[in-house]
Length: 263
Image (cartoon, rainbow, N blue to C red; front, side):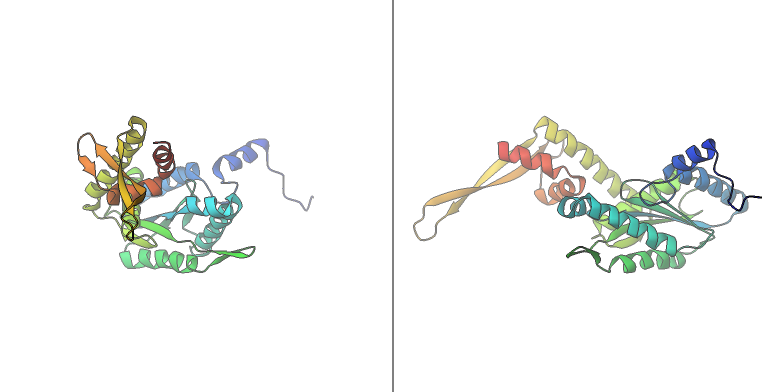
């Protein structure tokens, strides 16, 4: 008999490609939804607790822009290794988006247990990543939900974990946050503002205010600063303190900056 295992059939090969992320080797969103959906359904039947962590790398676009996509790929593979090494065989780790990962922790019922898992990820990421002659420092924001406390379906749990993750980013990043019902209103406002910001660039709802630069020895105006302001059709003038960080997070700062330069 052959010492080699039977080669995969064409169907098995296609199936494997369909459920694997080629960059990190982790399972992908499709596999997570299939498998976690079954786990969540079983938890509903048996009352078994579980926790879900949604993990998003902070300022990942900046890593790609400053160091290139090879560095970004290295960060993603490193995080995949960290997550895989830190879980048990019964847990599930998947890459579900560009820089977004999800971990399902079976049997976890307490915030303390889930928080320990999140802190291990953050502590490991705190170490610099060496790339040629450079060191890259990255962090992550983690949103955490517990079943059955935070939802009774996979869709609800994932939505609430996303809300908690956005809250962790809003609180300063490089941290974890557990879902609280009070977060939903603030997150809904942020997502609404992001939607309006995208439309504002297309509709040219911005104006520039020019602030003179004065030579204090002569009193002469030697230049101006162009300060961008957003005139929202419903909320009126919105402070740059509120929309510039959002523009930077979403990448909208690039088309906004181009509009400022052209104007």
